[in-house]
Amino acid sequence: MKNDYKVDRNGTALIITLGSRLNTTNAPALQEELAKFMGETIEKVVFDASALLALSSSGLRVVYFAKQRLGNNPEIVFVNCAKEIYHTLKLIGLASAIKFMKVESKKVVRDQEVLEEYAANNDVVCYSMKMGQDDD
Amino acid sequence: MTRLHFQPIKGKSLDILDTILKDKEVAAVDATWSNLGVVVEEIVLNIVDYSKSDYLDVEIMRDGKSITLRFHDGGVPFNPLEKEEPDFTVPMEDRKIGGLGIFIVIKFMDAVSYDRSGDENILTVMKKI
Image 1 (cartoon, each protein chain N blue to C red):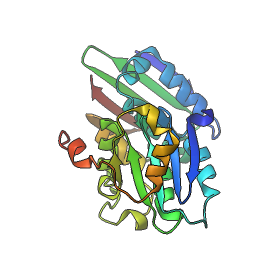
Image 2 (cartoon, rainbow over the protein chains, first blue to last red):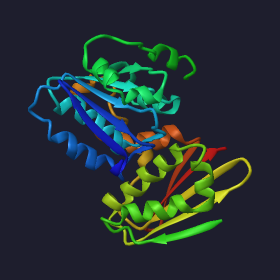
Image 3 (cartoon, rainbow over the protein chains, first blue to last red):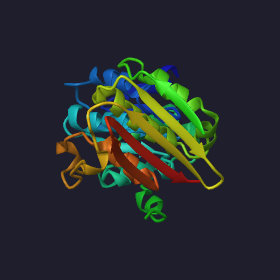
Image 4 (cartoon, rainbow over the protein chains, first blue to last red):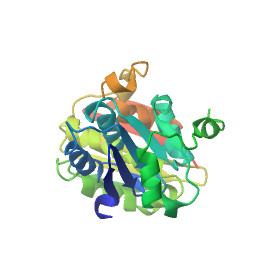
């Protein structure tokens, strides 16, 4: 993935597949990419964080941008979020505003069927509580 | 101990970050704890973007129990420990974005200290490993 991310649109959902880092090296470019969807109907923004290891404030700005500037207060979803990333999101008070989902196989995350599942309003498995158990 | 010297020129942030993260001690810790790279990024960007310093020196010290990085710059006095924490009680959709980087540094590291010595800001961060 150039810039270590990929953006797909499925109906009113944006699916952003992240690489190992979302930081100053790639976050501004991702934000620019997302800005193209401003003014459009976006109901859900899904960050596939299966490979994500580090999230800096530059990356967090992209998450804020998605919430504040896309659609009309879209739902923000993190898929397969590592414990350290969850800890960062919790640290800055975002964990309660984000839905966390777990998809068992990284491979299926990229399948069209799963992308459609993200796009739908159905809840899959919300595991934010489980992830939070080991924190603090 | 390693000491690296940079000119904190805007547009060169990524080169500075890359050099620090390639230091063998930093790279060894970052390989298992990626947040070290995040901390370095937050501090370097802050100095490059706001300090107006004409130099940035970074000392890197590692022993068996911890890694310590000390950042020296000759810019405007800035004590990050005195910066007000972001207001996290505001809903995400209404929240102002700012001050996250310094907050992350303080929360991620085990010790953060600031000194103003002469015309120099000295920020020291330590993480137990």
